[in-house]
Length: 116
Image (tube, rainbow, N blue to C red; front, top):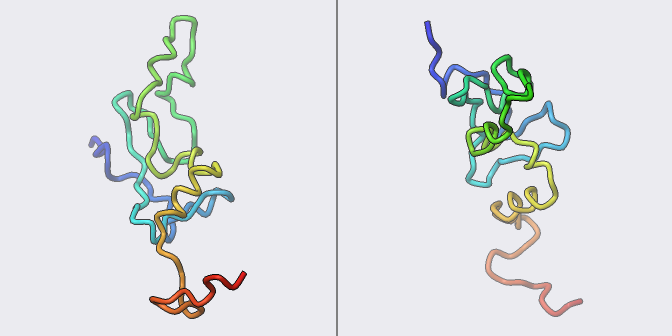
């Protein structure tokens, strides 16, 4: 029985983060949801955190392998990608979160304005 390419993949996230990756950001309260791994058109599982697949060109490299075969979005997982661990991309996620203002801030008045 052939597996669905988008579904039936192990969900590695817990509470909108990847706890097995020490520097992985949290997607919680950003409006982005963790997505499960998927299988691309080459039969390579993307986003499973195993980083190896018997069908991957990396595992079957030769002089005849054109590196361009591994270019494109189908090789990048939207939420389980090492790029999210960079400072710049973590900041992008932080900008999507609503500020945790309470219980220390007034909901409509900035009482600290001009105090520093």
